[in-house]
Amino acid sequence: MTLSSCVIRCNPRDLEDVKKRVEEANVCDIHIVDESGYIVVTIEGENTAQEIDKLKTLQFLDGVLSADLIYSYSEEELEALREDLEVQEPVPEILEKDVPAEQIVYHGDLKKKYI
Image (cartoon, rainbow, N blue to C red; front, top):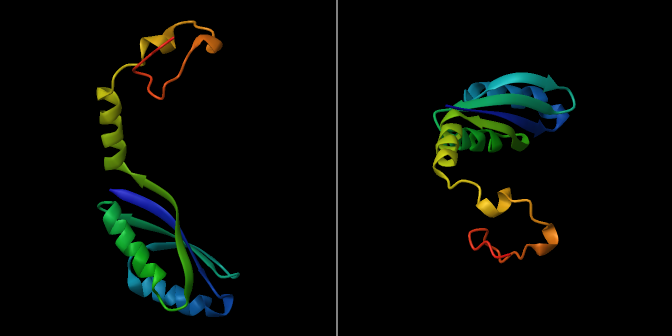
């Protein structure tokens, strides 16, 4: 599951019409409506691709000037990253030694470990 927050911006004079279109689109939950033309919503999806489709729906509604993701959270992606971290090589031994920085020669790859 993924969850994202989104800010929709419209002309303040179109706010009520845009709010109605957002509600009718049925792709998000409205949390805040600001009279200056901002609507804060959350979008949920089974995956990131589904969220992006919902965001595009909002972006193309009549009267919407912009709709941008502000924060995104994905349980599956977080778990995949955790698994990836578990299988990575340990910190190179050179980084665990107390070596003066001026004695370290960096060649763009810590695995070469030249001093």
